[in-house]
Amino acid sequence: MLLLAAAIRLSAQLPQGAVAPDFTAQDITGQTWHLYDLLDEGKVVVLEVSATWCPPCWAYHNSHALQNFYLAHGPDGDDKAQVFFVEGDPATNIACLFGQSGCNDFSAGNWVEGTTYPIFDNAALADSFQVSYYPTVYMICPNKKVFQVGQMTAEQLWEKASSCPVAFGTNNAGIFYHKVGTDLREVCDTLTVKPAFTLVNLGSNPLTSAAITLQWNDALIQTLNWNGNLPLFGEAQVTFDSLPLDAEGVLKTMIVSVNNGQGDDDYSNNVHNENFAIASEFLNPHIILKIKTDKYGAETYWELRNEAGEVLFSGGNKNVGPDGGGMFGNITNGPGTYGDNVLITKTLELPGNGCYSILFVDAYGDGMCCGYGNGFYKLYSINNPTVPIIFGGEFGATDHRGFSVSDPVPVVSPPEQAAGIDIFPNPAGDHLNISFSLARSTGLSAIVVNALGQVVHRFQPEQAMPGERHWSLPLAGWPSGPYFIRFQTGAQAVTRTFFVEK
Image (tube, rainbow, N blue to C red; front, side, top):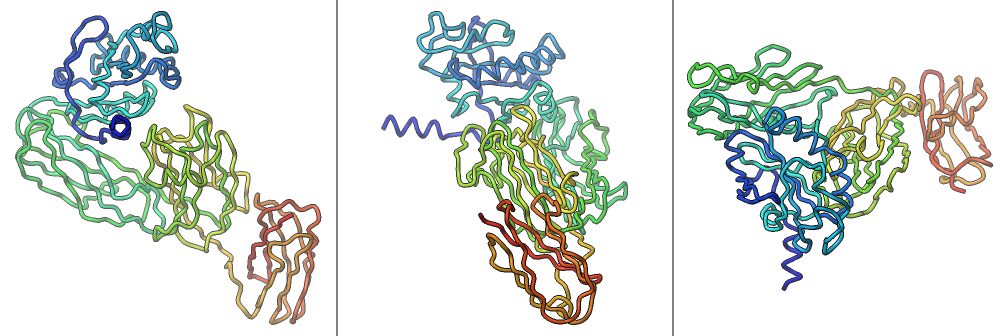
């Protein structure tokens, strides 16, 4: 029974956006703190729950991220935030916070020295936030909503804190938690969006009405007139009609009036812009993908999808999956898990012209770069394997990029010019046999390209006569892997893939 209870407690997790549990507690100096009093003052609270024996906790502590955040935004800074540290392990005593001397377990060092924000030795407080691993870092907004944020830098913490709704004035409506119905921001052909957001009352007067507009490149698309009755920090969901985008531009959501034309006391949260760009273009359906993992390769997963959303290729830890961002400490190695700090190269043969997207997921929510290694992903056209067309690595939980394939040369030749191409054996060992037929006299050439886009063999161009042709390609010394043989007959071309296995 005790083991079952422990397992349940460790697997529990406070949902993102839940109401934070209130607490009144004394820090190790004897000062009493009441969470909701701080939130009612409009402060953002950052709460770290750690254990003195935890190496990742000590590493984050020594990054001074929370200390720097506190100095900038605590009482000695702009006084807009408060930071708390909680030692959450009930098995350790208070001496462990001061180092190894007198500690009944293990302590990585002196956690108190140099720390100017309050410290609690309080396992019950940690339990009230359903902490399941160390360190867990929470951000609690003044509207009492709590979010796990991971081990952010001081700058990242402030950026996150700036998205919290903060009460001000009498008539004050704000746009928060904006979504457009897709995480793509690159337009290939058309991209359909359905903008929606949470309307929040941040004024002392009830919010009874608001006029909200949607604009695309400064052209008015839709006006919504919302009516209701929201108290302070009350929320309502607002959704616009679907809109197809076919160009680059800016989608602007704007509150233009509140409470029957009253002025808004804070215009800074009345406008939200989403920027869209034209998707990158590949001129060949053969794409080279290079991935460099960071120090936590098990956190990475990716999918390449077609326009219908069907997954054509995937890789990395399947336990993470496409929705794995924000898993924090609950990451287990599954099928396909990559190693740490390794380089992976893959050649992806797409079906042909059209729209595609590639999604990268980091389970912890801190991307592949740059806090814990210099990870990245890069996509190259096989025509130029040295300059990436799409690249990234510094993101949060996900990075979803759209692109198009517009091969100017058809990937399938007309049957009268290149009928019945056959390559065998495939996979090949010492040599590759190539058989094909030509319907009429034509110029003929062919090249073989490896997975890096390098030409490794070039057949002698010739003016070929109609009929059956047979070639034999020696493969002695060729490394194992995929290769692409591209035939050119006049203005048309066809590509076939074969593999070398030694």
